Length: 175
Image 1 (cartoon, rainbow, N blue to C red):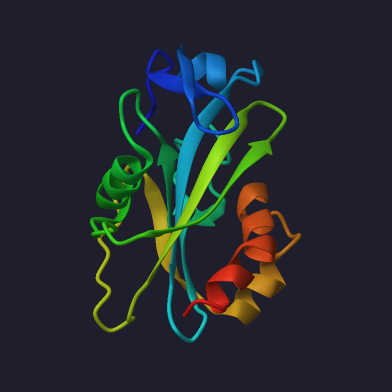
Image 2: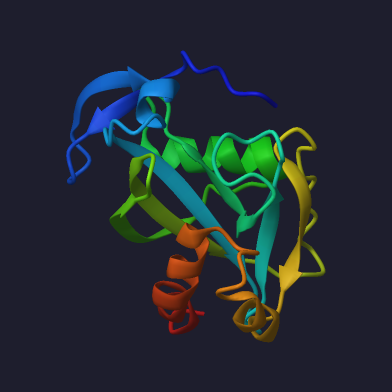
């Protein structure tokens, strides 16, 4: 799915307070306007992590493996609503019980995001995602060993690598 460069995102302060809005093109064009996004990690009790391979049509990090669900918060939408919407859009799963792990600012060469990272714990036998083919090129569970072997090899998005190193240990202590 090709994204609309005129789509509007909220612009926020680091505490999440909305202070305005800007277009996708402005937010992704080097302006460094801070805009909120959500990430959802889907994990199992044995430590496997469900990842998606970003569609080649994405304007940021196409073709790289990323969090199970990730996306922008729409203007007028709460963080919880965005997590639930993105989970339905990308994997057709219910994430209404997602737990907030951490909020942080991520800066790349073209954008600045306020990342609201969540997680859910699932049982692989009852977890039946239906990846959206216009958003996701592939999706599967990765073992911790597979993830460790992929780190630093330009297979995973830079943001995912940072989250896997710094945030997934927090999940491990909670499951």
